[in-house]
Length: 85
Image (tube, rainbow, N blue to C red; front, side, top):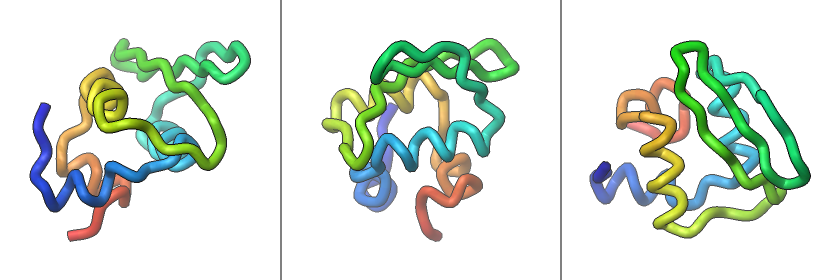
C-alpha cells in the first residue's frame, strides 16, 4: 500500500501508544499479550500484532506492514484523527 507524501509525513512518526489508541478507537480488541507483543483482533476477523515499546516509533517498512495488516486507508487516518486535512 502506498500513501501520499503528505499522509506519510504525518503517520511515519506514530508511537506505539498512538497506534494502539487508534486501533481501540476503531473497534479493535486486544486478544493476547505476551511481554511487548500485543495481538489485536477486529470484529470482522482481521488480526494484527503490535510490538509495544512506550515512546518508540516504528521503522518505515514495519509501519507499512502493520498498516497493510490493519487495512486502513487515508480516509481512516482522517476519521481516527491520525492526520489532518
